[in-house]
Image (tube, rainbow, N blue to C red; front, side):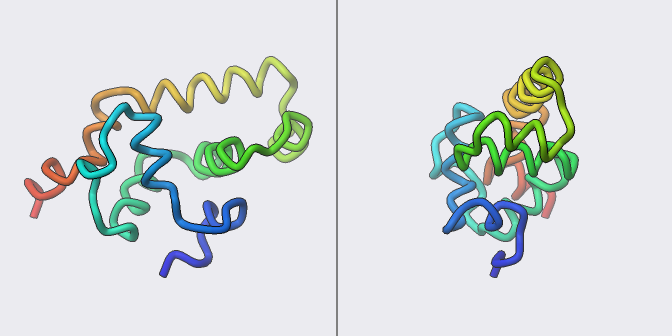
Length: 106
């Protein structure tokens, strides 16, 4: 399950839940427990480019490889990172990762 995801291209395991919890200022136990469902919410909230940037950046890819991959200048890369992490901290995005908000839709 989740073996062929963008996340797994840059990480050896599916630890994206821990990273989401860290970036969104939430506890891991508060997040959706099913990794497949959590990854689906992550994909729905971020663009493909943002998801790839998150995966590469959290894997510790160097700045040069990020700039080359996305064809960004230094300024564009910093702006893209800022926008990505700002988006993850917004309530409308952050709260959608919580187990309780997801249960309300079922």
